Length: 561
Image (tube, rainbow, N blue to C red; front, side, top):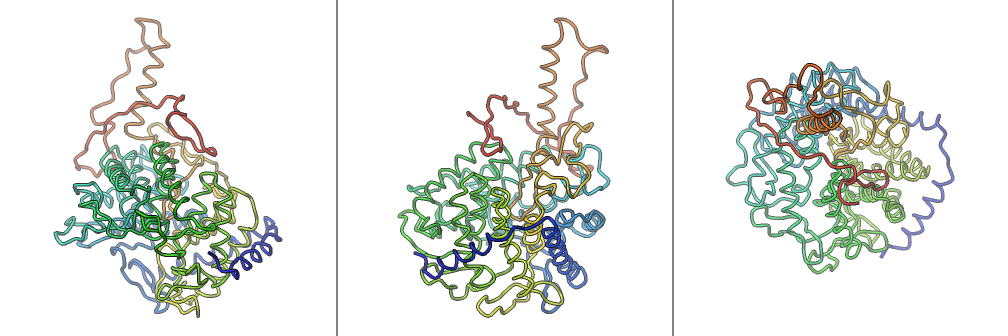
């Protein structure tokens, strides 16, 4: 269904790009350019927009957009450390503790607050050791950034108090869900919580977050059509689909992303099985010539033959599962669109080979660069480095202003819009930098830190930062190792240790000094709560036997192998 001109353009792009091999010196020079891009935008925000949520780069001022809590600063915090700036990371972490308060009468997006605020704070908290911050005893099970993340997430929980468990799209941070709030929300707004909420539960010992995320996922799973697809918008009270277009783009994208990444981070076979069943239906009904169209969720008939810029995450996600051939071909299609316009329009008509009316903008989204990073990691093909360099130069040429980088209002003539979304610093710049730094600690290397891991948990019994970071949909890296440091997992380790010691001792004997004392009441409760706050003890779960493990491309899951 592609126009012939696009096929030709795609071939030319890849032929030209494949001819160049980047040296380490060239990659280092590109990283310096990316750092300069970051600091031009970041300093412009601090000078002209802080404490507002976002910078307006054409008028050099700020505006609140998602909740009035200095969103760009929260979103950019872990990027500072990714770029190696420990000093500013420490300063901003302290500044946020002093200036941000979530106890405000504001209606906030449940989805956006989770991925940007909760995700950003959790990531910074888990990177605090590498950032040389003063750590509270027991870190990562305690710390000021963790308390902030917990506070923000707890204010989202009222949205999940529905008959179905699927959350409302908006919640007031002081008063909960309003009586006139619409029950209609997008699919991604239901299924994009398992990474952040489970991390919170495992660090604090409060299962309420993970339970809410899992209940929402399972409720959404039960609404799929007879042909295995889900729509775009759903009524969270009645479970009726309001928008029945099925695809991988806007309104659905991060739902599929979190099934895969949740399976990897949590070693969860249930989530992986869900995605694989969806993927079979998507490949059968929505994939045409390595594009993914929108179809009617019950019939599978094409409803919108368009490519949306948010779909560009898909090749990277497929690469995590080892589906490299299809991922590479789909990426080639998407990049041909970038070369046509110098960016990805929000909507692109595949039959016409051009933008869709009123959807011509490019708000500096990261998804194509994100996929390039994953595919370069998977293949080592320097084609993706060339594409990253092209993206860097396109953004510099089209979007740079004296006060930052502006969203592109219309890619046909490169008109600019007076907005710089926080994800530009959280995602776009970060993925660009990581694309050109294969030895970065987030990839398992040690180029940006002293050593490859840090001790954590009680008496330093946990190993953090050893690799395997999982990025949430806002590019905030989460360390899966941290999930096994605190609360019930620490208790599981103690129970296992007791069993092993019991087996090793002759009958009737114990260690010198008598039996080991039981942990005091409440030891495994959340120690992330503020002093005086009520604590809820968490339940214990059995340790998974080693025989119940299997791996996919080096990622370990639990379940029957």
